[in-house]
Image (cartoon, rainbow, N blue to C red):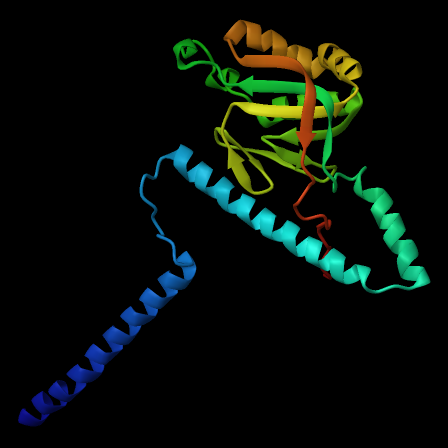
Length: 243
């Protein structure tokens, strides 16, 4: 009996060491995951979280632009006939693909949810908010009307940009945004305004805006600026697995 008690006492230090080891590992893992930040930041309201997420993405985009500039400078130091030709072709494609900033006259469209005072039991709440398809309808109409560059919430849109609706926010390039949604387009202002008032989808939204007090404001602006696209330009696609 005394022997059993002695063995139990010998196992206690090992158990305590194991607990401290696991606890230390969890603290280290949490620190690495947080990257030095609080895992549960204070003031956890949705607006603050969205603003923080957008700020972090803007910082990453700035880093990406800086690195891209460094790569361009290093590449310029290497020269050959074939490389110079490829570089020329790539440079010619930068503006039409949205990789350079553009300034000029344009059209600004602002879309907002209906005020809370409109909320009533007999109204479908989906009719009182701006959806992804509403934003896409105005973006498509502006492209069709002759837009040379389009931004949403200040972020440049290109042909591969996806606009996704998640809850009552819109996610663009991984960043969630809440209304009001501001779309700005540079180009033929006459053609773009004409497209906005003739597109079936934008006219339908305008009708709903009148009926349910959704926000819709269209302005012609003398000077707008669309920054260069700074996101990922490579294409991702699914691959079939061998059966």
